[in-house]
Amino acid sequence: MRLLVLGGTHFLGRHVVTAALDRGHDVATFTRGVSGDPPDGVRALHGDRDDPAALPAALDGWAPELVVDTSCQTRAAAENAAAALSEVRGYAFVSSLNAYANWPPGPLGPEDAEPTWSTDDDEYGPVKAFAERTIGAAVGDGFLTARAGLIIGPHDPIHRLGWWLDRISRGGRVVVPDALDQPIAAVDARDLAAWLVGAAERGLSGAVNATGPVGMTTLGGLLDLCREVTGSDAEWVPVPEEELLSAGVEPWVHLPLWLPADVARTAWDVDTTRARELGLPSRPLAESVADTWAWLRVNGRPPMQKLAHRPEPGLPAELEAKLLGRIADDQVT
Image: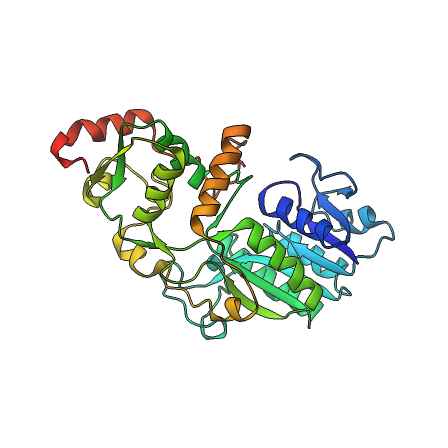
């Protein structure tokens, strides 16, 4: 079938394209043309999603039957997609848990039991909720919105898991939060991508919490996997939350994937019953971590996507040194 990927040249979109080609679809991507090219055999369409004339002009009579939308970041982009693509049979839209008005910290129950944002501001969560409503109203049956959480895997330009792998691979004393037992859940981009293509094919409808299952792992478990796959001699130096915050360490940014205790307690308590019923897989976390490390070793640090809601991840070396200087050797685990 004719399948259009809105996005499609990096990370999740790249994996969506691969999955669609593997399933025999006639694939096109629609991007601004600044983040690389799709694989051979894919129609590379270019334009600005915020321009209402761009997508119809790029399609130029090529009528997609299926859509996987990985790149909607503005209200205008949502309105333009709704106007141009309302006749497709299946539309899988990548939203976010941030579309929920009470996340974080959650917890989140079944999709239809939780309120989504209805405000008019241009923050990330409200824009995703607006896009869900706008495109969903235009497409009707066959519109699925995948509210994704933490997405990991090869080709990740956001570099949260990648930063930990890189830092841990260098060994030595590594600053970590003293809350290594905080829960965390993730979905591999390759699993999500293939599932999105299948959802569009099947014409699935409604909202789905598209992340890993509750109890998947802890932050400490994930970091231990990073140490294992890199073969590192890294030693964890746990630092209490109050000391991290007083030193200017930003949760989720300077120590990627770490959240303050009052948020971490429930942030990954997300009901994924519908996702499991609809076949969203969850490959072993060790496989995702090992494959990400293997990809990083070959390709190096990917270019950072310069988006306002995605600051550069990682603990600056001078801040790490300052924190390590405060911690006695006998606190190393």
